[in-house]
View (tube, one colour):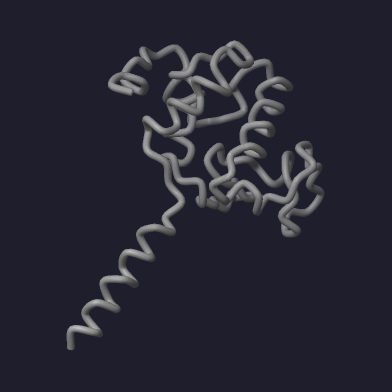
Length: 145
């Protein structure tokens, strides 16, 4: 009985350790070092964007009405920015496989997000940022971090 209980506990801990999620403060630190001021956006802008796009979940995939998918922390779209092998007429602007945006290595995610922000001259391609962050006081997204 104890063996099964211990095995069950280990399996639960294993499942928890595989969650692909960052804390808000972890992302604040990343944004401070890699995104601050990029494309005219503050750290708080980037943190707010990621909060409303993925809730800091690096493994998130969202299927859109047009059949394209959004991947990872920044919800990078398969029609324009990555190749998922499922989206017709995709342009793959970041020249990468969409699955790379689902792991905890954020280097490729950040580089692609920078490319998107550069082309758009800001964060307007992200509806989460446009609808919930643009023009707002975003101090709460970095406070305490």
